[in-house]
Image 1: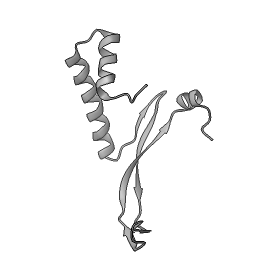
Image 2 (image 1 turned 90 degrees about the horizontal axis):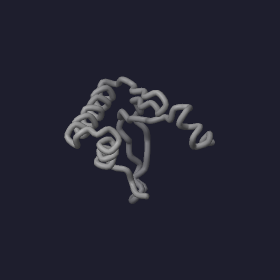
Image 3 (image 1 turned 60 degrees about the vertical axis):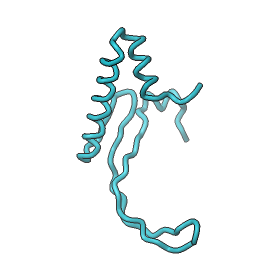
Image 4 (image 1 turned 120 degrees about the vertical axis):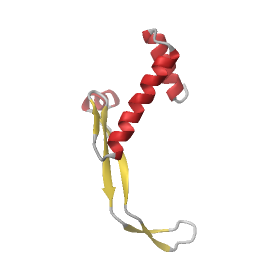
Length: 96
């Protein structure tokens, strides 16, 4: 089995619900845009039974250029992290 893509998700929605491909595509696009907007605002996004995305601030830190070994400063940045819900984690084991 290969990677599930956005197009594959849309196909599954069409098959399972009878919605048109355009309706399913529009719904998925809106879903993604809502999540992106909330994360851009710094708000966590939680989907019960699935997981939670949250934005973390990473401070500047020292690092090395792996090609040259030169020491560099890695700039501060915001990153998105995802954690599984307890329900989903139970399906995969405890992950430890």
